[in-house]
Image (cartoon, one colour):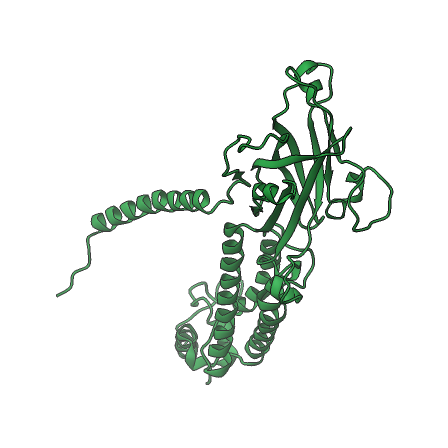
Length: 387
């Protein structure tokens, strides 16, 4: 025959289970946070940092991600110079003009008020003077500058549909965007081409997974095409944010379906529920609204796919209908006396009370009221007890 465990064993099992729970759950969450956290915006040039047998001048850059805002449609990169093959201590080094594609930058970064066009840039974004860095590093300006890149939707030659590129907040948290960098360099005095390369990148953005696809243009020099910086940056939500949004959505739906099942059991099959159950749908509406605001980078208002699939139309409609039907049903249908054991007990006590009064065995108190030993609740159902 099965035997129930002793209280000591139950306490011991409860203790070890609770101890394992408080140890395993935090460790699991920490591991998930470390492994699924967005990686650094990192790129390292695969080619060696040599001249590759070519005597042309070459300037090397490093890009550091400062910030990225999808709502602002902007990504800020800070550029530093990591090397220059021209040594001012050995030979004279001319200034180098560095040009960026102005249509991929915000207009404030072009340092001009000229109209937008698709011609070759004529106004440099930065003028690089290696002589000042080497021979006069204290009094010269810091060799660094920032560019604000425009964030736009990924271009697809086969499909221009937004549903294909998902470059809209409507598809949060599965939206993705693109930023591009195109830069080249010329000597200021001779206007001769200077090789420009991106050696490395770094940086992190809150809640975003950023990856770079840098084009290797060093092989184009042999074909007469200057080496330039050409990179495409993909911006999308982090993996943890996607999982967080999906888990919340699933929980919302489970609670909604549970409320609907309670309504079906109450209205359709006559199972009685407490009246307090009808306030749960109203309370969950405010709780879910507050919980949705905790989603990192969630668009303001309603209109994204999470709203359409869980937060607004289907879920709230089901909750409103379930609350209305269950509330109206519980208010209209009073419980039958035969369905309540407590009510039957009070009816029995009422019969005994009437018989005692009829026999004169139950007296009155000193004030003419009923005696104190009348069972509690009997007087409440006095009128419903048949004679």
